[in-house]
Amino acid sequence: MPAHTRAGLTANDGDVARSKTAALISADKVSSTSVYDPRGNHLGRVDTVMIDKTSGKVVYAVLSFGGFLGIGESHYPLPWRELKYDPRQDGYVVSITEERLKGAPSYAPGTRADWADRAWTGRIDAYYR
Image 1 (cartoon, rainbow, N blue to C red):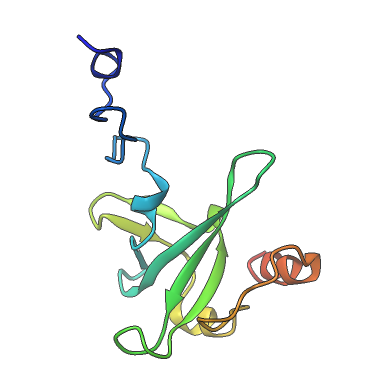
Image 2 (image 1 turned 180 degrees about the horizontal axis):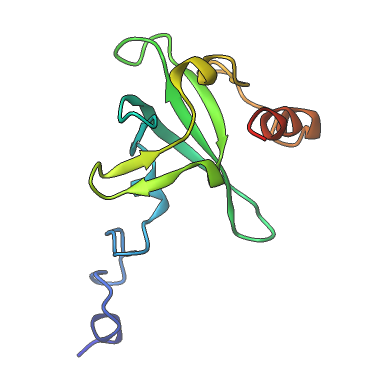
């Protein structure tokens, strides 16, 4: 039996395992996962995650929110600690309401957030404290 099968991995022919387990999820599966407010209303979806290069920990989830059919939506970085996975909804729940999210730091699609700018990340962290 190949080592990757014995270890319980789902990879085939050296391909990277991309399935979900009880406690783990691959980064490509996190992207597009739905995000809900405390009342269960759909807020948006995770567009991407930002990972600290040194520690390897996810620091932010960037939420795509607003607009219609992807037009006019903005990207809202949320501290990763704000997201709690809810298996019943197969998505993340945040304690933030839509009203509060609308006032959060964000950036428009097609523009780039300056993640190296400590003032930018500081505004995000301060908003969610």
